[in-house]
Image: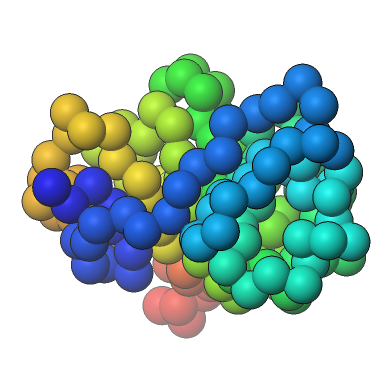
Length: 165
């Protein structure tokens, strides 16, 4: 069953999410497309940087500047939303896109709710890993909830009043 939206398309998630480890420097990384926790990436960066099939995920309490030197070489960065009320991932996404210039897949993972997708997209997310109990079709429709936006965002750098002038 498809459980992923990427760039407006519903698809099966081909990435494996590696769980956090108490010993990130010794954590074994399987072959294939794997998204590793930030601490594992930092502990094994010299070895992992040679792989083209790795992504890194950040928790909402981790800093995107820890990836600043590696942004250009990463194919995917995921930001974990541990619960509905934790909005720090929105700020992390804006920083990753605007301050660090990340051009690859920026994926929202964790407690990703349908009514948040439009706003996540405005902050720079282009990938959404949906929970198994969520409808990908409804989620995709939620990305186009509004036809016009007033504020500037990563998807529209000019506020409405500047576009009308």
